[in-house]
Amino acid sequence: MKKIGTIITTIILGALLIMACSQNDSTEFADGNGKINVYLTDAPFPISLVSQTIVTINKVEIRKHENDSTEAIFISLMEEAFEIDLLTLSNGITEQLASVELEAGSYDLIRMHVTDAKVILTDGSEFDLKIPSGTSSGLKIKIQPEITIASGQTTDVLLDFDVSKSFVVKGNWKDGNIKGFNFKPVVRGVLLDRAGRIKGRVTDTTAIALENAAIKLWEEINDVDNDSIVATAFTNPEGQYQLIGIPEGTYYMTAERDSFQTDTIWNVDVLKGESSQIDFVLTPEP
Image (cartoon, rainbow, N blue to C red):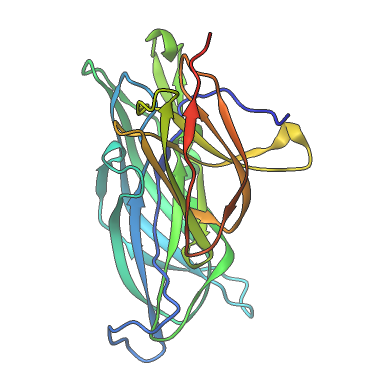
């Protein structure tokens, strides 16, 4: 039996989406240029006591890969402060950050500058979070495989900002005892033209929709103690969820909610450009 981790605050806090099409874009480009679009997305924060999770991003850059140069070349995609409540973005909803025309070529890394972060609880309490000193030079997100921007085409990439690892609660939040949060941003990068999505619904054994059920997508690794979470979502009031920007491959999934037994579905196949439907039925605990 695979090792299933305990549910804690897990979010797809944010994402930069750089949309990529295999066909030519109808927009006219300067000779030798392509286009990159930048979006933000999120999944609901799994703590009923939290009202808002707000981050401010003031710069996004991308690195051009030059084989014959040892010096990194960063190109600015956005240089204007952008504040967003990440809880307004969930289940596939995105917010555009930038749309920039770039020289055709390969790009292998995105650098995002986060200047402020705070959490507001439902009782009005606010926690201003300390930004790690290491992020002053920008949060580096490796894109694998590299982004290839072709002349006359638009390219898409999703940067998935995982809040389960990025916003760490101080105190026992299950007892309502939140003393604050540590901010340690963690982001994954995905080429959307090689990715698919998963959506579905979670109900109980009487077909009643379950809100705030935690959905986890796991990557199987030979060492069962090291299976890793690829993405997470939480169901809305209709029991629905959606995971976007999932790399093509085979995974397994879990659905968890307080007072219910965890349900696991194995051999979940994700194909690029396609949507997989995975529904869960949770059984109440004895």
